[in-house]
View (cartoon, rainbow, N blue to C red):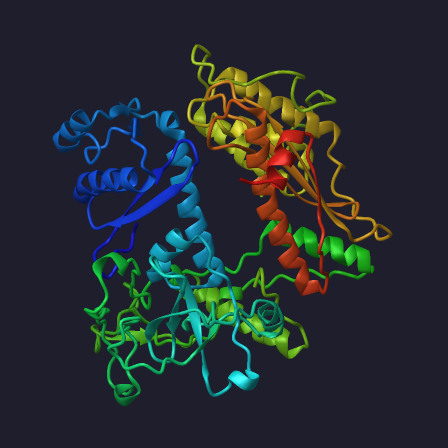
Length: 553
């Protein structure tokens, strides 16, 4: 992990049972702790399950391949298998599970707008519901606090809740998950708050025990107390009380005030959001106006004090060491995009616009070329073509870069352009001829585009398909999907999968999981337009993948 925990933990050890796929996760301070923990784990698992461990499969990391583990495996008779160097697919079960845990933790923290100190519990718990605070708590008004759900107690049937008022981690079962009202509160909110830890909340009773209660953990965060709020903020080290055992200190805390992620800002909308907006406008028979501000970055008001040095040719001879204080944002300034976005947003909101909560060119001439009916030869498969004649890389990359602009409005070119883009490192004449054929196809279909009828319904549906083992170089499959809003095509995708799979059912399932994430994003995006979808149709041509989705075990 990029951020160390308060206990210095930075690594995650994932262990998966090959039969049941049951997973154990352990946070480590360093890789040197892995051998001792593996030995303790093998002893513990054989005692609890009363079955011996016959085989262990790991990669060639020095934390796994060492004399300590060799001697233990030989002593207890465990068969030790290692994967070939640079071949993680041979240990694919745990590799995919590790990647899934990291992605799930990252997604949960981003979706819940939680700080990074919760990454360990996000991995261990694998669920952090987002619950927005409510104003009227009813009978719980004087006996409840709003907190953040962190995880489950390891040895008790209880929840771990971080109490924001007392800065304490309490262990309790008396919690009220208010998920439905969270969505309503989100829709009525004016916008996200970046500097407050307000995303995931739980209504939990106030603890009545003393501060030395064994069921709580005191956390001293970096925020100053009310008594010294006027003093200068200083970075302090978070402290956990000594009454909590080390094994339960997997809660990792990091200072986030100066995180570079929150300093950068680019007010650019996703192309899918723009197409959804146009499809909805076509359905409502609205008129869309496009505006362009040529001096956008020169009109933003700065909320911070920003100073710049004097230009080389315009230095004040009387005050050569002085600097300028900016009143407006300059082009190229780090704060310029956010300053302009804030000004534009305030103007639009003053004109009774509402802010969405989800998603707050080059040309090549081909006048004299021939025309073709399809962009690629039927049943043709591109490969690296190592024996082919190399061509100019800059010219090939320029053509690919130009064609990538067309993907925004030409779904019929998505698969072909993305396939040609794989070979930008070492293009050959074979690849260049394929790109030229796409240009020939464009010559005859230059007037084609997206058509959004206004008389169509507003139902949301999706179609998926996979080209199984279609890549000739890696034998990985290519996922494809299309999402419709009624009869209006709004999003589409064609992407090579990150892992190779023998079964077509597996590749179809991987495609469905990615499409499900996309369709959920679209559903949340459409809530800004007052549209709600309880049931969304997803079409797949693999019955085994559909059965696996219905019974995911």
